[in-house]
Image 1: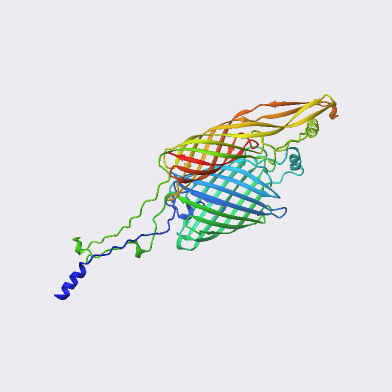
Image 2: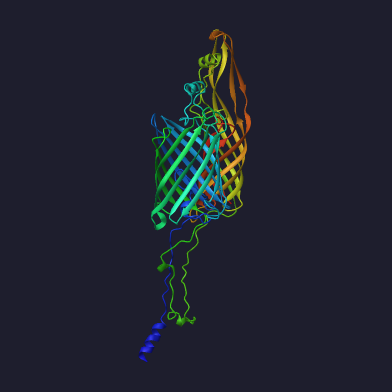
Length: 542
């Protein structure tokens, strides 16, 4: 009886409940694809499949090429990509080059891709890819060397040739084998729209496997790339480049990855070495279940422990820990009013202001020396400001109207005749003018959960006005400069169609006040009119 009473008392004691919070590393997956094939960039030269819906991929890529003759060429690429529903992706990319002591922006690209089906519904999981490249800089290193003497004459007459617009299409293939080996391959074709009609086709592929299995922190493999490059004058004599080498991928965290690929040339036209280093960051989107050790997933109570509560014996109960919700800094539907200052920069080395003697002599000889300069804004930079109003009809997308004004200036000259001496004299002047624009915009953003940050990408189409002023100098007479009749003809401003796109980051200081910073590119109707803009301002949300 005594033992029975003691036993009953022990069973009647209150049970101390212990809250268990299960944590684990989240692994993004796009439509059932393995995590390594759900990052957009499979390796440094190979893309694969698509991103999960509403996820973002940011990448910084460095490429260094060493040649048998001449200085090395360095390329820097920045890209941002967003996954959309129904296996769509959109992306923007900017490339910069450093070669032989000079450097600057080369291209700005818009990309889109679409996977034909969910993962493993079709063998090799085909994905179609399209890209349009806007040339915004000068050609510093030719993949196909020009005929002897031809390139030098072109540079002397009009300065370095401009990077031409081009389009590219790709077929992306990817597959995993035995749940250990991941493989991807790209077939690509690229063609310039004008100029020497440069054409490039080829393939790149890579195979990788993990060597540290927990969370696939480290992968090793092999990577290769073949390119066939020609111009309209060298179709029968292409430049064939084939490089191959090892590749290593390391994930310092669940969302970041570092890729290193030293590739080595195998043909006479190949670089001796082509080294790639890329750092990428992926976040947002759909995620798989987080896994924890089996011993900590559930904590059960025995029927003896619950006998005092009147529960049926033999039932097991799981304890659930309450986690308070994160503060919401961005609304599902909200108005945004953004006011910002801006700095615009053009694709020029300098703003020319040649002397009268140079202009008269070069024009009389039919070979004007005017340098490279922006033909719409006029100078090599301008300061200004603007604002926009947007309505976010859902948490991730909004429509709006934007306007801005730039305080632009263009150096010029005024020619007149001095009656005291029988010669023309000139006076340097500055054409100050205001360039304005109005656009309709689409903005896509991703508020990072439980943070104040929201990266965004936007694009707009509208009109730009107030720029395009120019002066043309007409001269007549013999080579004797004192007998030359010089006359300046002034052309006023023009209104043109403007396309603009960019990406940035917003930080919410408070629920209704944010700080925005972004970089964008404006495309008017040619590389000598295009410009970039850096903006910073305050955003008010209602």
